[in-house]
Image (cartoon, rainbow, N blue to C red; front, side):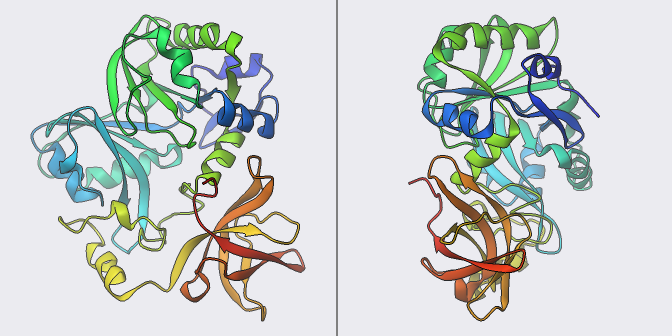
Length: 362
């Protein structure tokens, strides 16, 4: 099992640790609800150094990205990022990812899910027929996400980059806590605002940055946050988690990701997705909230009033912000309209739920 440069910090802070994507990761410190509310109301620090990062360089870098992703990366200028996906050939998704434009038409960084690093690298590599320089920098890249409404004001003294006014899905490179060449971005996964910082752990940079963040933020209530709260925060925003809500058998059209699927270029499964857009889909990812008491969990059956299976739950939790149980799941399109009554099979019971608008937090 791999460690991140911050693993010993988590253990020293009393974090509950567990394996995740081959890494020893903190799940919670003081409890998921407490950590969740800290991010929603103030600020928290996530160690997400397990994520994967690839650098693509050269005159054909953009061409390669355009041929493997669904979104249109030609719209990116230096300092901008976009959410996108890697489709497979069968109408499903290899992964979802972020594309950062470091130098227009020439240098890009792809940020991929931790559990898919090798799969994504191999998938993209087979399309690299025009000599694009590819570097997997995952193992040497640290990534901290400092999220919450007060995150940027707490951290602003640590950098000359104007992070308070950093627009969503943009980034800048600069000195942070005395460490040079830090990529500072605003592409958060919590819906609470904040930044992410990417840097190489050399000359003690990881310790230096971690300690500086908590020296600045500790007196202002900044807390370390585990992956448990990361999941409840993203679910309240209706953000998809690869392996749960999207996978190699789900299409962007079914997952509500038509907005990152641009038919102005060619990519794997384009014809399948175009047909789905034109003719409609038979199932759809929806948000729901429980009416009866109970929590829906991944892979529970979703039924109609007559007891017929009409879909399955992909994610579910008790929402700390809303005080009610919520979830995401695929259902037959005939049951996907807002306020549709559905039933979640929890052990031997069918618990009533209703389809609601996503994001759950208005």
